[in-house]
Image 1 (tube, rainbow, N blue to C red):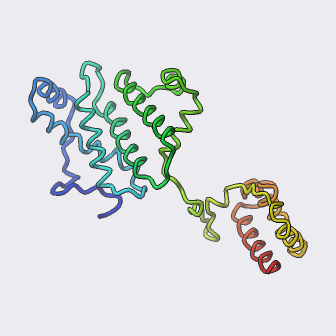
Image 2 (cartoon, rainbow, N blue to C red; image 1 turned 30 degrees about the horizontal axis):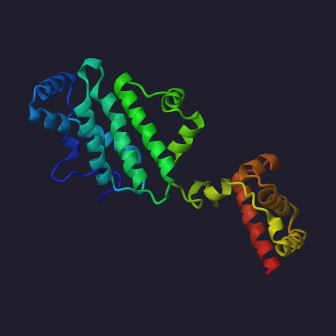
Image 3 (tube, rainbow, N blue to C red; image 1 turned 45 degrees about the vertical axis):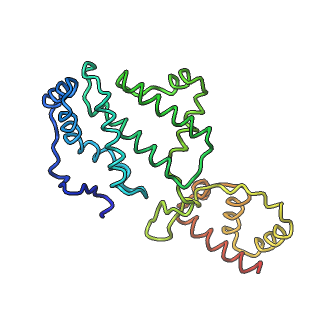
Length: 258
């Protein structure tokens, strides 16, 4: 299956029906009067909404067919709980519920294990956001969430961050046609080199034998703890240049301490 295309068995997604507001309102009236077929028509008439909502996850590691099925669950919940008296479009109400189901699926199937208390708080926050959106038609602010759940605002970001996909420090983030810059190149190194005195002595000797610019960059990166971007700003060169000099310096030091 193509990663960026969602396939529904036996259905051409390009031909999916899109309901206008008048048709949608009539179907909801039939559904609320007990017509079960109207619910099915509402679901089928809003599958394109699910497709468009899950496209933001097309670069994730998760199978798009699976995400579509999960998204449909969110759509069904939206249809079952939608209040037509709110003068709100179904799409406005449904998208947060679809996203909520997909994010819960991704969170529950991620390789990184989050503590139960943080995961429970994240569930609680997402549920509150869904309920608030259903009642008011907008997402609540962090201040409202914190006061309603009796937590601090910083806990909201901390908990919701646990829902994000992990990224490898070796993930390439930039390439100017030369050396690739990886996420690890953006992370300051704050390790305590004094924990290994013999290695520290060997490194100091090696640093005296390499070029001055290489020495400055290695000290700034691995002793002071600056990022490549910070070093580039100080030295007036590009980050790609810093990355190349750093790699050469590491290789030269490695040869000297062998």
